[in-house]
Structure formats: C-alpha cells, structure tokens
Length: 468
Image 1 (cartoon, rainbow, N blue to C red):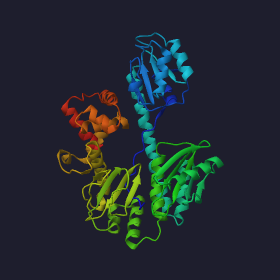
Image 2 (cartoon, rainbow, N blue to C red):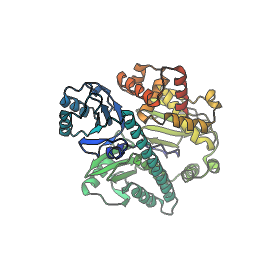
Image 3 (cartoon, one colour):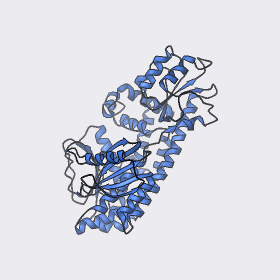
Image 4 (cartoon, rainbow, N blue to C red):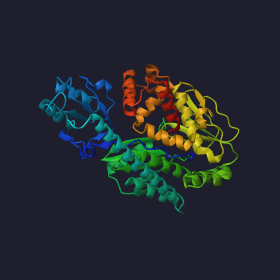
C-alpha cells in the first residue's frame, strides 16, 4: 500500500451513555428495579407493541407503559433477543406500579429495568440521553484532538518511531508495537501484556498478510482488546495495539498513528516522493497549507474517495490512504478519474493545496451520492443555491438543526431524502428492512419535531445535511 494522505481526522462515533449516568439525574427520578447499572445505552425508543422485536436496532433503552403487556416472560425474552440495553417502564396511565412478573422476568434475563415515575415524560428521558451523548462526544473529540497533536509532536523528534509508539501507548493506556511481516516485534512501548494476549496479537498481525490482506483486524484475548493495522510503504510492517478498554475514538487515534508511521518507515523515497511525504507530515504537524503547497507539486489537486471489492481502481498516484473500507487518494494535475468495475467512486472539484480539506469533504459527499443512486462514479457538483450561503453560518445552523439525531438516524435520513422518500430503495441502499426505515424516519420526525411530508422541510433538511 502506498503512503496515506493527510486529511481531516474523522470524528469518532457518539459514545454510548452508561445507565448509571441516567440514573444519577435526580430530575428524572428513575429507579433501578432489576439488572445492573453498568449497561451502555445507545439511544431511546418508545413502543407499546406487544412484540417490539422487529422495530429494535439493539442498544436501546426501550420505554413502555405496558399497554399490551400480557406475558412478561415472553416480552422480556424478545426484548433481550433484539439486543435492547434496558427497559424503562412508566407506571402511568396503565399501571400504578411495575408488575412483579415483569421485575422477575427482567431479573432472570439480566435486563436492567427502570421505573419511570408519573411526573417524568418519556421524552424527558430521551432528551437526557441525547444531552449526555453530546457531552460524551465532545469529551471524546477533545481527547482525539489532543492525541493527534501529541502524535504529531512525537513524529518530529529525533527518534520519531519509538516516540510515536510511546505517545500512542500513553494515549490508549496500553501497549503499541511495530511488527515485522513475520509477526516479530521491531519496537514497542507501553505496559506489557499477558502472554496469551501477546501471542494473539502476533497472530492478528499475521492475518494482515493472508491472501485477503485486510487493512486492519481486531480481537480480544486475556481480557485485552487487540487491534492490528497494516502500514503503507510496501514493507509489510504493521502496528499492533493492546489495551484494557476500547473507546469510540481509539480507532481514529490509531489511524493518525498509522499515517505517521507509514511515512516515517517508508524506505528509499525518490526526491519527489520524499518532498511530498515531508509536506504531508508538515500538514499533520499543523503547518498552513500555503506553506507546503510548493512541496506538494503542481496544482490543481483532486481528492478521490472510493469503496468496493477486489482490485482497487488504478488511480496513478502514490498518495493513497485506505481507512475503514474507504480508499482516499490525492491526484495531481492532469490525472483523470474513471469508473472501475466493482467500485463506487466520488471525486472532488480540482483545488489548490489550500483547499484540500474542503475537497476531501466534496469527495465524501460525491461518494455518498453515487452509492445512494447506485452510480459507479459521481463528481462534486459546484454552484447552485448552496453556493450563495456563508459556509460557516450554514454549518453552524446545520449542526444545531440536526443535533438531536444520532449518526444512524442521520445517515438514514440522508439516504431517504436522496432517494426521494422511497422506502424500498432506501431499505435496499442501507441493507435493512423497509419497516426499519419507516421506524427510523418516524424517529427523525419526532426528534426534530418536523413534518417530513412537507416539501419545504425536506429541502431545508437536505441543505442542512449537505452543510453538516
């Protein structure tokens, strides 16, 4: 794999909310009747269905007043089978107290059960979860940003590879090691791991050199979370990580380290490649794009995003990054992009070096549009009404408008709007059942308090999603 390109660090997914944090909100008055408070909640869903299983995504705090609760044992079994995190039971208007049979069933199945007092609307519980998630996401974004700065500083030291490994191990509170193709350690930093975990990590690194040649692999062993990432540069090197906990932003932090280590270990670069690698490192270190533009070479540049299976498209550039299944490439002036069998491609408009960040977003949007419309290739479409808006103001408004939506609902809304509200085509594009699409869109409408049947509302949301 060629050297990865520098680019904006992707935002980590929204961290879940510990049930204990929700229980600690005195204004809600929630009481734990069964199960343990250590469960993580990913979102809130309300249902009065006798069997809510078909409408659950997993990880929910399911809220109900028990309107159709006739068989507590079967009801709880189905909720657990669907992967719900916890059950919230409102004691009004159907029941005055939580049924003993429901408490016993939740205790048997290990499903946390919360009593919701009459004074607490279900919507208030949902709002509290979203606020807690927003606070956790802000903390995680700050942690990722600080880690990126720490890694970039380490890369500028006289012994950059050990320094990057040490900074990474410190940030992840675990062990970071550089592995040779045969699975042996070349350098390592951080706390030692149990022998079983060390052997498992070595096997995981060797997985990266199998016929499929995945870019990353993950496992658990000996109570440790393990991950391995293939480095660029053609040396067959890999980064191995072991930690006691796995936070949502850890993959993003590891991705920054992979970029830096790939550049630092690349051998015998030619003058042009070395200059461009230096430019990329300087960008990661925070240099202004204008300062590194002469090193990158002749402008304009085109950013390309591609997803698919099989042999990647021949892009004719060494500036390529593969992260989370998406190939990202930086094409110099004069290079054309063409459709490639088995792949979906999105391309930005040609830009100067100072606009590469914006071009990266353009390519990402073009790729999403191509995938939603089942097209092999899409290019960024400049102009239009959106070009009349101030980007900063539009982005700020979009973030405020879409703040109530977690990422799964945001992506569903984006796809549904791009396919003109078609339930079947949206379900096919997302790989879910059409009823799941209906449930998610209904949830979007409730969280946003907007009528999604209104054409003006749809237009406003589409522009917000573009600027988000």
